[in-house]
Image (cartoon, rainbow, N blue to C red; front, side, top):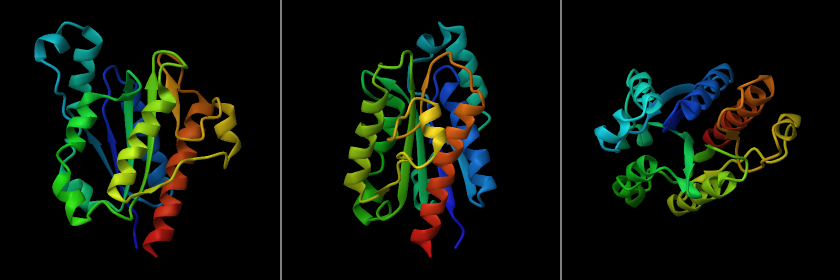
Length: 197
């Protein structure tokens, strides 16, 4: 059975979109059918337009399709990517999650592998807490959490976060970062294939 992976992201300034794109490339190389999807921007337009970087990112992301509950039913694996907001996922991500009551109730999210990535302005800006808070939600769904753990040297090379890749805003997406994101995506695809077999 083909792994159908939904990679869902929200990105204020482009970091998480880049992370999602790197993951999509790795997942496709691992044999998955990938939908790269964005969460809707829910901040007021006047707030977005007051910051050039945010406004530019909204324009960049608009080329990609919006995530829908139907995408969650289509996929048999999920990878979420979100900036941290006070130790949790961005409100745009939580808003989408709040629309999934019907899918949760029907069991459409259960038994599907899921992983998460994040970014923050500084290394201790809530990165681990953001991923763990998402995993709490995924446990409610009955999903199967597939964290990278310490399963590849690439994890140690980027700071050693076993919960999921986390990026510090402004740092380069060098070969180490790409390898860590790629490993997480490939591991998710491999586990999804085993569960689907």
